[in-house]
Image (tube, rainbow, N blue to C red; front, top):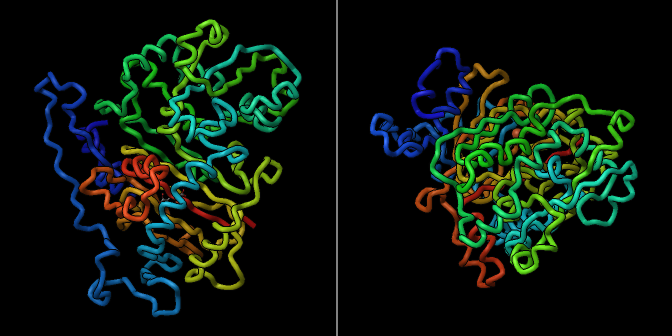
Length: 466
Ligand SMILES: O=C(O)CCC(=O)C(=O)O
Ligand SMILES: [Fe+2]
């Protein structure tokens, strides 16, 4: 969608949607068809004057409605008078802590049995971070017919019946795997031409509705306007759309018995395409492959601790999961204190959101946890973003605030019933407001993480479920 579209139908839009449109990133409409002067448009720069900047609030009394809580907490904490239960802790994480959690998110949080947006298409994927840096590719092995799920154990990709069922009966069409992948030939060709580059300049906006939780969450949407892959127009349209849509258009989950037991099953594993060039016979049985680097770039979410069953829109304790990381749980309990009414905060689940340069998280309410008095503890890592905090209805105009790396937001009680979302992240070097990560790390092993985060934002939002 270009700038013109955004101007149309404003009447019909809710106040929340209007604010999303106001702050979202618009690519210059001429970029996709740069030869057509007719399409050249001047897109006005986003007006950011209304965006609250907690990092610049030193004299709090001068900012109406913002209250600094007195020094009873580890960090300076701000509350918003008209938004009870909402707290903002600017710079709660040190730069070292930010780097630490960025690394944890990319190496540990995305590891099976934690699930990611890629699960529905490829099954569990292990070691994506290192595979991407070794330039490996995810290879489709020869499909075969079976009704025996035990055959899937131990191949490193499909680890259990639950995931197996999810892949087969989940909302992502099986064919999505095929749509999102490349032929061996095309992939090797790309490698040879070193042409696996980032986003292109087309302005084809992808809008997907991501159902995180219950009904209200149906409205959670991701936009990603440059989710494209240079070399193949058709593939770039389909690429990874379905991995978002897997949570987006929930279809009735088939019971195990209703699943077609003899359906061909595709298995995926990482392989080195350079080796295959030398020995193409080795890959003869494999028809599709996806660069790990692309999968990493298209990583959108992972779930920690108790897993959420998107098709039932409920937490499902029977889905294989690891206990919530103790260190993160302890940190979240400390961070959450300003919003606590009574008792302790027991982190049981988290959604880890990964934002690329053009991604956004649409307005939604998180309403699937039992006790709304317990806060959602939400930490921002990486590029600066805009956070919208609205009302219980979309018609209520939201307020906007900047979220920077190291900031923490708490939403408890009444604040939990408010629509919120992230319409924009700022990845430009001059506007991302990243701390100097290299100053806290001379270890070259950290450089790839620092490179990644220069173009990305990670949000870890932590919840007590029961
Ligand atoms: O990315 C953010 O700051 C907010 C994330 C969020 O609201 C969610 O995942 O529910
Ligand atoms: Fe949320």
